Image (spheres, rainbow, N blue to C red):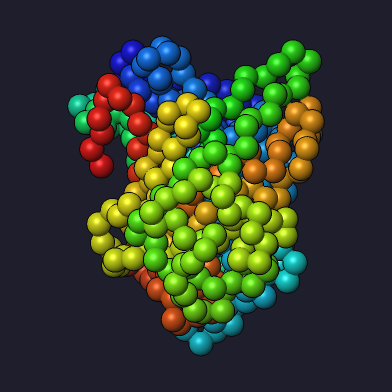
Length: 375
């Protein structure tokens, strides 16, 4: 199989598939969303789906809080109490998570139809660029913002998905500055997701308790309350939060005292040690499944990586339409800005000003024994 790009209808949206001999990635124009990721296992000569996905565009539109694979923004993660101050002006954002704003508020980037341009048959590989212009004061955020997300598979690294997030204030924007946190909210299960069974029911994926997670560059975690709102402090990892040398996710997933989450599980923002603004890619996390042998390494230029084990999905979901997704059957490894950063000067800030665009990169490298990859 060679490198290729394919575009298919998805309701009134489109699905764009980037393919290499080792990797197939399908992205929806609704939310610039990763819809499918398939990894080729050479020994078994089969493709394994490792990305949790919606069944249809209507299901994606109806979603109220999982954000499977979506590009989230304008300021994803948390904005505490739905407010922030920028250049001595106070702004208010919609509270869609109790008293707080999460992932840009309701009807945010994940629910927008993005334009796209594909690039194929090049020496470099295949890519697709999605674009969306966020209006001034959309969901309370100032400035008109031209946003792009570029997904690419390069010929030098056919088993790596490279994602670039770019945002720039337009020349016609009424405001000169805003805050930005754009990232991708993919959910992974490297055991593999089963194919749909007859009668439209879905066999449940195995829990990710068996996944081995290693985060050698994450010595610190943002201290948060039970709602995952930070207090501005970075503290040393310990106990169930310490993945520096690696261990199974299931080892500490039920440690309520340490994790402080209900339902229990991981939902925590780690600081990437050695991070520098506009610095190079750094290893954020390495996760692998002993049952499939598939490994994923996540590199990024972001200061933070959030680990979330799908705690808010339903326990004991049936697999039928509307009841398909079960708790702890996926893990999100999300490079991003630190949560609520605009309200904590102790955190790296993510302010975008006219002429100084936002640019961050994430690379997910999947283990394919026959094709070693370079970042």
